[in-house]
Structures are given as structure tokens and as C-alpha cells.
Image (tube, rainbow, N blue to C red; front, side, top):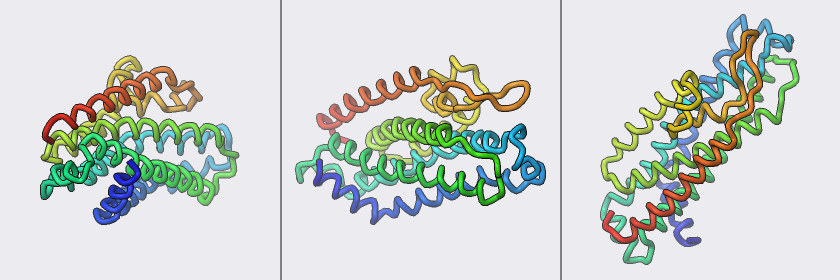
Amino acid sequence: MSTALVLELRKMRGLRVGTVCAVMVAAIVALTCASLMSDTARAGFDDPDAQPWERLLMGYVMVAALISPILVAVLAGRQVDVEHQGQGWTLSRVAGFGPGLLCRAKVVVLGLLLAVAVSVQTALIVMAGLAAGITVPPSPGMWAGYAVRLLLVDLALLCLHVWLAARVENQLVGLATGMLGAFCGVFSLLMPPALARVLPWGHYAVISPLGMGEEGFLAVTPGYGWSAAFLLVVVVLFGVAVRRLDGREV
């Protein structure tokens, strides 16, 4: 596995996957922080009742639900497509790396990249709020908890997209799935909770720490149990699926 990880890191540098990820992170930060520029928002920066941090975090939840599925699909497709070019899977088999091992290695290296991306974008959004002039103290626990849950959902979807990219040579299929996921992710915030829980992208809503009440945003308990069950199912299915890849041509 260690050798496979080194090879995947080299491929990542050659494919400029980090640059693609940086562009998407910049888009998430820019779209989330755009609301800080409005006069209405700025008027409530020093008023706890105006909930400036809650508004910013809810904006982050919505933008992440929109862009994260596309980001995951693009990263997985780019990292796997190189294997479909020039008989990459066959050459890897000859070198002793089966498709299943390669898929696991790709998830690990891309997962590390996503961990950095989520950490950086969350920190940048908080820093932007402070720089814009929000004087109400933020809630670090709420922000950090959401960032961890967002990363876990991204990793679960990454597993699904890496497998899909390995099975289907045309990477437009994976990208189209990611775009469909973006649509579902955003609208899952408006769906009944029971429906959101059964959709993979609906978990972008399940992990939200905020809900809407009559007087503004309310802190809610995310669906930890549902998210844990979703992650467990994905891990098991991914493990079985990539093992089966070793027994067939990809």
C-alpha cells in the first residue's frame, strides 16, 4: 500500500489535482462570504440577536451542499481517468497493484487532500467574518463540528465516485452524477428529514447544525446516528466492491 500511495501522490502532482481543488475551495469561500458585503448583514455584525455567525454558517452549509458533490466527482474522475488511458489498469496489474488496491490508495490520497481543503475553507470563512467586522463571539465548537462532519460526508461520496470512475470509463458519467448530487444536496435542506436520510447527498443536510425557527436560526442536533449508519454502509460496500474489481477487467 505504501508504494501505491507514493505512486498516487506522483500522479496527483502531474494531474494538477491540487490546483483543481484550490479553485473549488476558492469558489466555496467566495460564494459563502458574498453575503458579508451586504449593508443589511453588516448592520448586524455587533448584534447577537442578528445572528451574524449563524447566517454565515448557514450560507456555508448551503454552498458546501452545492459545490462539494461536484468537487468530489471531479477529483475522483481526474485521479482515476489516468488509469483508463494507455492501459493503466493492465500495467498496474503487471507491477503487482490490482485495481482494488489502486482504488483504496486513490481514496486515501484524495481524502487527505479533502481534509486539507475542508480545514482551509472553514478557516478562511471564519477569518473573513472576523475581517469583515463581526464582533459577536463565534462558536468554535459548532464550526469545527460541522467541518468534521462535512469531511466525513465528502469522504463517503469520494468512495462511491472512485468506484464509479473505475467501473465506467466515460468520466462524464461521474461528473453528471456529481452535478445531480449538487442539485439533491441543496434541495435536501428543504426536503423532509426522512427523505434526505436515504439520499447519499441528503447527508449534507443531515449534518447541518442549524435549523430555521420563527425567530431566526436555531441550533439543532445533527443526525449523528443516521450519518454513522450511512458512513458504515459506504465503507462496507466500498470494501466489497473494490475487492470484486480485482477479479475482473476494469
